[in-house]
Length: 95
Image (cartoon, rainbow, N blue to C red; front, side, top):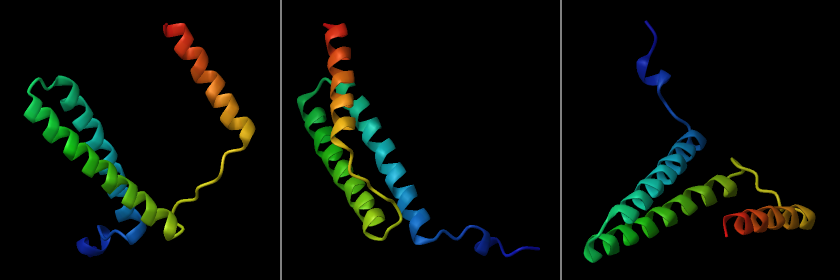
């Protein structure tokens, strides 16, 4: 029989990735709540929770990058221009 506890132990990197994914999903759920809510009090509460979730997500992401668990590369100027052009075209198509 295998050691069950050893089979489910997460390392720091796995835990941070899980936390990051939970915060991303939580933020999406708050966004849905915000668009469905009609009470100002409810909407203000959800906005506050969304901001906290966004901050938590960023903190998890920062820890991942600080510990070299995730690599961030700087986009080339041409890639940025290409992305801007793509979204400008999409916006004009929707107008």
